[in-house]
Length: 180
Length: 180
DNA sequence: GTCTATATACAGATAGAC
DNA sequence: GTCTATCTGTATATAGAC
Image (tube, rainbow over all chains, first blue to last red; front, top):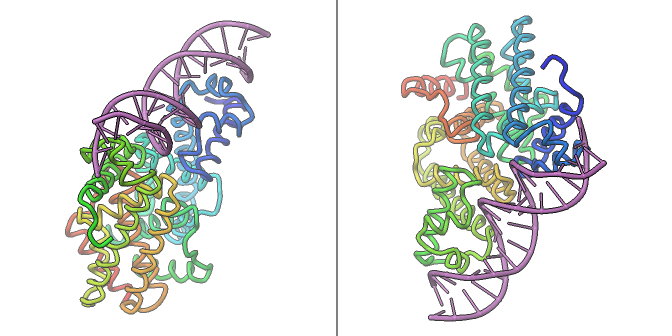
């Protein structure tokens, strides 16, 4: 746990990339092995089953998310704005990890969807002190979910009608006004 | 087209149910045939391929959505509220059709995700006259997306922390205040 | 129109050599 | 630790009988 072998991380990176780009269907053991530059047998030495591979990716995502959350708690100024801004995925390691796990969840992995729920709850806890009441909290969370959904998920590999920088700023201003 | 054979509709209904309940992975040709009470050969007489089956379901969803939209245009009072309320899926034929097509989109069908985009654009057009500006429009659309996402999709078969009736009413009031 | 039987392809997983 | 070869299950699709 403390010093994960390099090959393991390389496999997880490849799996994550395949999930982000091609979805759960494209992220097969075979494709992952090829993308990571190992053989199928080699992959199965590190991860004994597809379930084990998925679990490892989920755990890594949760770890990154927790670290990100700690940073957010340490710097509590403008939390709502930076939370919304962070919901529009830009390709950070956390973004990629979340998108990959979300694709797993869409494919039917319950461990993946459970972990996403848990992370969402942690965000909720962190935001609660910075909004007026529970209704305001729900509004912020839902806007974030909506951005995340449109930007990175389901409805398209084709990224929807993307907000301009100005439009996003205006949206954040409106949400902050409605919520504080 | 004008009088679709009964067997065809029965197959589409079965396919839709399997998608809603078990996702794209569970909705195989075999399972669909069984659920519809026909054989695989019988199914393939009506739909020559899985692609054809998916396309037919998508077309049916778009037709239902258009009809729903017309009803919304005809009754323009409280459009924003009823749009948001309609985003929390309750099992109407339109809800089921949308969820089924969304599962297809998650499974990688680009015709499915394209159709969802198109329907979302139609909703946007319908709502635009009833909100203050583009930013307000985005807020409404994103809250709707967020509700829809949490309620019916991806993050869980497990329906998330569900809003009570009172919480939903409060949310709608807040959105309407922010938007008009 | 609807059926059975079968062809083809690819997924995940195992066995055992090196 | 990493490889090749192979087994098993399952999904789509075809062929052709009734």
